[in-house]
Image 1 (tube, rainbow, N blue to C red):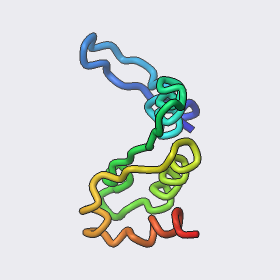
Image 2 (image 1 turned 90 degrees about the vertical axis):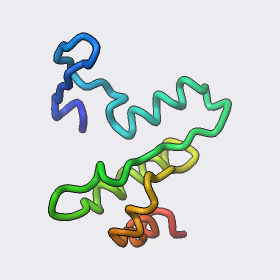
Image 3 (image 1 turned 180 degrees about the horizontal axis):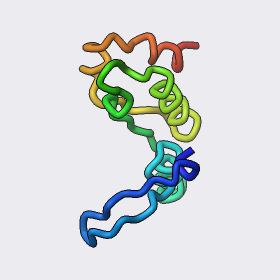
Length: 100
């Protein structure tokens, strides 16, 4: 998905506009963490809740996709900050991914 968007960012050190690398995505970051640790230790994907908000509402479907990606690619997920889960009543989104 990231590659298809062909997005760029401005490197803060060089000021150059560069293509976003795989690790700019949840999946890519999970893959990189597993590669770096060689799976010798548990790795947990981490998500910032407000990355899945727009001014009108939470994008619950994309949030759940990201949670599932963390769960599938790593040993679990850390969510920052849980206060936002409570504030915006996103417990159902978590339950939809982790409830068995």
